[in-house]
Length: 395
Image (cartoon, rainbow, N blue to C red; front, side):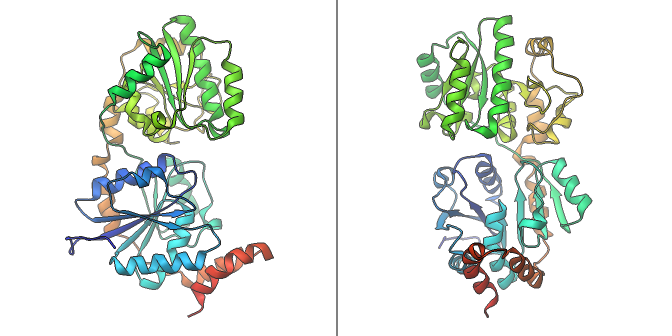
């Protein structure tokens, strides 16, 4: 149980499921909870087979609950007890699995529950979740989808936000020394090395080739954990004969990798990584769907690219050319202005508090029962769902 001296303040339980343990949505949750902690009581519950190291290292109040998708009933009961014991007023889930797990506590205790969709491609939440009354989305792409299809009565667009942060000069100096990068102009790409990000990484390598040919001091530094050895081996094979691509995969180095952004000249960014680089006023590129190169980000296209949360789903009207890339790195960066205008979490604080003040209560118990029943398509599925179903509906 968490101790608190703020009895008159709202108490919000943030729930998040551990997928891989790393990723931007864990940091998004911590950034949001961190900026609101002086206005509401915040608690974080991490459910899954293992704790996320990002959540575990947080100074915010947090706890872990084992959940393997077969102990639905047990987890639902524990979340309900946790909510009652800590006098939670609002539940806010950061993925559809944690939303499903926390839904019955909301329903049975009569408190509202919200869901954040943290980016990625559009997902038809109506098909995979209990009814959702309150939704936060990060991108205009998602907001327009849910507005058009009318699944969610109370939704709000609050683009992802980040905070300004200190650089880790010791870590920067170590990476520069070990890779002999002194006096190099570093093109930085931070992101997990996996099949998911192969297109972005390949675009980064293509960018590095153009800039290195223009100016031999340009090199690419790929920083990220290896999630998929096959993808890593493919990249090593592709770059074996180059002298301008470097990898940094050391677990300690890639942990909270934003602290090394300062060492770069330009950054190929996605999601919150893009925003963090803007806070350091870097020359920015973003991945695109229909080019072999990432797109130079300028004042004229920043809003269009942000619509897709700086992802590969953005399409350029005209093919990106080598000269576009070279001309872009000759310009002074504008990204610190974008950070203050669009990405600073402090500018979103009021939006979140207003959202929490206007949440709709859960009124879809019978619909959720239908949802669970329709989910039971096979004996194997029933073996997973049965304890969850029994907990929900055996009163």
